[in-house]
Image 1 (cartoon, rainbow, N blue to C red):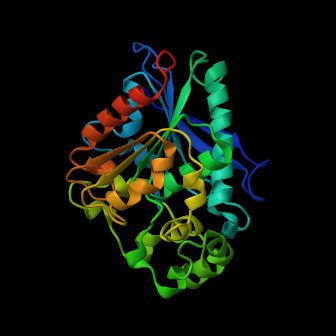
Image 2: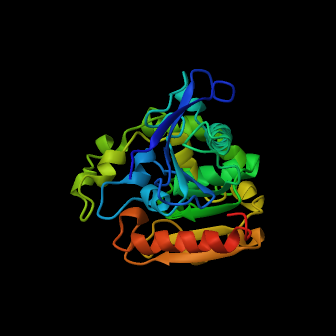
Length: 314
């Protein structure tokens, strides 16, 4: 398969000052594979760049898997992450600010694909499926609630109940108080990390290349954390209003060794969508894309999208 097309999107109109560009990779189907008519919008989680969806592992990462089957996959560096710009004030990188930029980038890239200015031919009938991992799934929920743009959402390793067992009292006091949490976040991040973009691997002496079964894979995708986004994602109820606003089909996937609240506790939050699918990834921790059964997850995502998108338009 050919290399992805790297696209830089000018986001100055919607980003905090200094946030000039967002960078994405567009994985297009091979010339000998007919287009399937679906754009997959892939958002990485905390401490990960867009390379999370194109890891150097046996088989293919999710982006190449999708493209090989006729789909368009777009992998995203959030504002402040990877090759995307860092605003003048990194403490402006709140979940709302990052999600607003992502929404503008999706519109720009989707318009380019439909018009044929990105890729070899116009794809006017593209439908859009959003996929997010962990804090990236939270950003996807926020993007969808504020701007729409996706016909279905797959949320991997995510739930609005956060990680209550890991909260210290300074954070726990904001459980189910999202407005208070947003006001307090800059101070909480300064107290905990001293920076809005901490390098947690270096801070904790982690060597992801030493993790069993993933030699170098996650290390290649590692990037500083969007701390305001990541810290908020740990607090129960941080995105309750955004989750309640979802009106598209949702798939929740958790590893059977998942961190955070278990799937059985997370699922009721999403019942209001009216079309909810639960999937447990066997023999997997939080990073399902490096698990031994990632291929089953990829197949399930395709089958689910085929079932929930209207027939004749995917």
